[in-house]
Image (cartoon, rainbow, N blue to C red; front, top):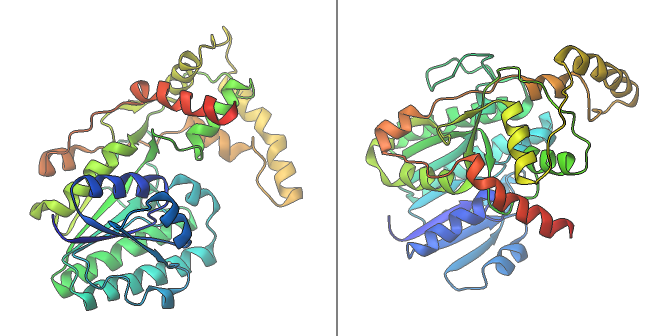
Length: 331
């Protein structure tokens, strides 16, 4: 790759790592976020052009692609967004993606990489899902991501644009202090996380630096054009395994007992009632229990085979660094 790259969501968890990787390659970067001052604080260098724009306000996107060869569309890429987006947000984000694609075509952009989510296809129970599995999103966030994927592929077909879509599972590693995994670490450390039983569920994840590797490959490799790829670290974990690994990294011996799944589900029922009365989700409810004990299992064999993607991190390897960051944040 050469020349200028536009990165949307540049101040986010994955965006920051991607911008740094592009800079190491000697590329110029136009970093887009809602707050341009945040970009300037992160990268006080002429190699990074700060742009303040908002996908929810498509009119702010005019000209953002001018002079760019590659667009990396990462805005709303984290599991934090999946938990908070509502239908109105999803609609405005979709409109922003449509406008961004139009700007990319008008400006003569050559490559467009869209960061999607496994939420766009849903979860398959005990089955390991692939790129050919039916897309059955169940949330506003997932439906918006799936609709945006269709826009990206359509733009590629109509305008001869190199497009690639990456679907991400839960992403870990680095200095992220938000999201489900950092919250799980904090809850276990404070003794507020129930000792889960082994249910045999399988959950896929990916390290943030491996996600960056996949993102660069999606733009660089001609064979990625028009393709959809699932990105994982190549391992699948049960929630019990994740729980025990975090306990070990925290140097906290796990309890010798565990809460049977039936008891855990019974404990969650009052949370359902409280949530209905308060009209907001209670931390421990039936949906949370099913998410903890259910499977979200995906295969990254296609991107390994076609793009020679080789993840180098596992959750077990990354946990000490994540715990160290957590300790610094809570000191």
